[in-house]
Image (cartoon, rainbow over all chains, first blue to last red; front, side, top):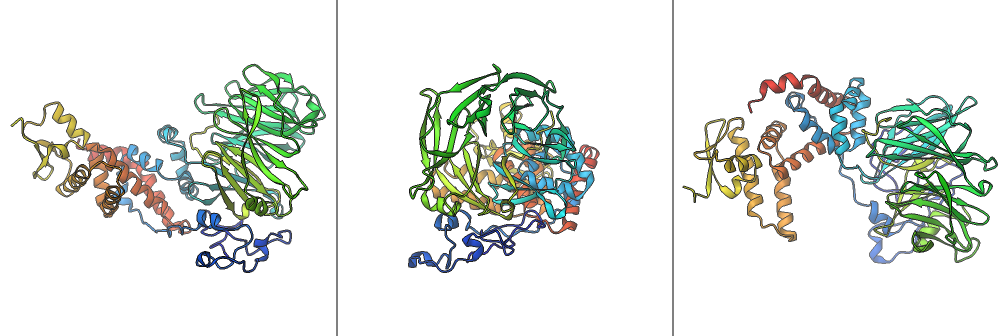
Length: 430
Length: 155
């Protein structure tokens, strides 16, 4: 049985290395995955045996190969203050640029005076030029046992490590995660009876609320940051239940106000599946399956007559880099040949072209019961699948055509929300 | 004299280092000095000690002498050289970083930055005492750096 070292728990200190991924010792009663039950010996060929003795179903060479390399043991280095105190600021910035944002963030939580450094303009300006740390997964959930206190953990894909981020800096509303873009994270929820939207940067622990919309109620929201223009936009499409005909509203941070635009046609057919890329918001309509596009510059909705694959179920729209748009969903539910497939929209021919299929062993490992629900989202040509019951995530790199697993207790909470996140210090409230 | 392929570097301790020109121009600062015609007798480097200067020259030499190929052996050899090169005490690393920054040797500078970043990364988070010490170090950089830096600056 592959057992995790220092397995993650909600109370765990951040940065604890997870060298092998397996079940947690405190599996909930709901967890019926093979990992949780400790599946017994599986027939493996002699050449594989030297790697692992027993493997839960779904864990195979690919998974071991991805995460099997033992992490470097934490080296305790005592930085001698008297030596480094005289280091010039620009050299210090260069060094900090090579330290993962979460490490710098941790330094901050030790002493309040460290706040000053994160707000220092020299540091922020320098950091805006630093290349991105890489894609991370931000998970957010509320621990009902401790009275709805918010919890947030971030998984850094480059470092393959979980980091806990305190979320007590946010107000005490009933909010939930909308999404993240360019280092900012958007939440919306109810402050008493009022619906509000807020934007925050978890690394700098700063936040602000947005002004109320013209039709201020729970709506489908999506946020997009434009780093070059140092601004962001939030688009409110339809009412969350899809039964009210509301005009599309767009918040522009440079104007700090919402503007009204065309109501989405066929609003009663809209789903919650949206994706934003290249200044366009794509939304899936159901019965029949179709694609609507909202152009930010024009302020109008357009129907994209791309025919959806037949017998597609649970289709998700995922934005890729530049203009790429993916459709992810399963074909053939209740059939033995059920499969999860990925299509890409050909903007010129206006058709969906199948680009990949999830290998059956990953599909079986992700969705133990073939009709099980899954969530799918993506960013920068990475598509992530999460399954509530399995408490794990599967990431597909569209460019490299590689599948890899992510586990950790943060994914096991049934009400946790996940999205891709890019940690940036310089993503300010604009 | 104009065909001489060696450059003389005179440092803080008054010592003179004779270095092949091709090695001496690795540091951009020296390259510019030569281009500007300041290298008639020897190039003064008053703020660098012999110990540090000899280390820097050693690094430049190694990188100049290693053929710039994509061969695995050459690359691995360089990598292991670099790995051993930065195994120095913190005082040396500090002096190195200031010297290499002044001399403007990009490759070596990146190496040292990354080394120190790794030292910070390698800290065990549980040790709050440890974190406070680091914090004191980092914070004191920002608080005390202006006066201390200009005081110690000899450039």
